[in-house]
Image (cartoon, rainbow, N blue to C red; front, side):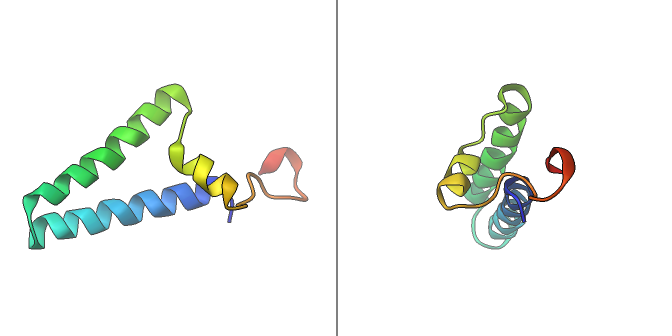
Length: 71
């Protein structure tokens, strides 16, 4: 998996977990959902993602090797 795949998987996981916690534990967990949504929204304008920086430092590849144009 490449960085964008990991970002989508982790964001989806955080959204689902925080929605479940907000429903079952306490409504304040919905703030975590809002944080992930706001981060995805700002990425659409700035192309800056803090999670991508972390994943790069952990050695996750940025694109698929051996294919044209990184796809």
